[in-house]
Image (cartoon, rainbow, N blue to C red):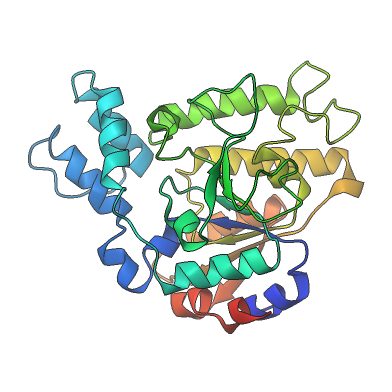
Length: 299
């Protein structure tokens, strides 16, 4: 199945999962560069560094930078967020967000920046949550109005934190493991409000957060490498597969759009993992075929 066909057939019930690839397409790469931003910050802590060394994941690289920063953890996160303030949307950002808005499609993103919300002309929505914490603002989102049910309407939800809450940013492997611990309690904890124990799917702890989308919508992954360093997201996909195994009547499809790279020796292993957790891999001929796809123009 091609991406255009998928968009036309499944548009009423999809949720998009968008990664940093959307910021690397076309002219956006010269302005919205996550890698360049990280290297720029690293130079202040590790003199002479010009790139992430092969064999070191970006998450691990950030942890190394933090270790060598003399305890400047909060300052590093603040600097990272401040550096993203000038990132801006390009036509392909607007095209995809307009498609999502027209079809009331929720959007999950691993990005910290607000490029997608600017592209969709959305406002920040702060839900009335007595348990709110700036470390995990998982109920906050960007939309035209406050959303009670994440599955019911278009909104933009940030998985790994958002720039306006610097302590929420998940940059290092240590950060990812903290998210795993928090989400794990919500998913398989002993409370009757955990996902696996809740009698009603709308009553579990994450029902008004982005996590509800992961377990209750068909997912379309765009612009994500989903490599081994995406520890938190890949763990969530394993938990999603376990949940559907326990409740097969609640199962939802998922698709991963990628461009073939014959030089990538890890690609086959990644596809093995994704297929094993219920995600179908769909090849696109180029990145232009993804971000400039005519399917995004479909009314």
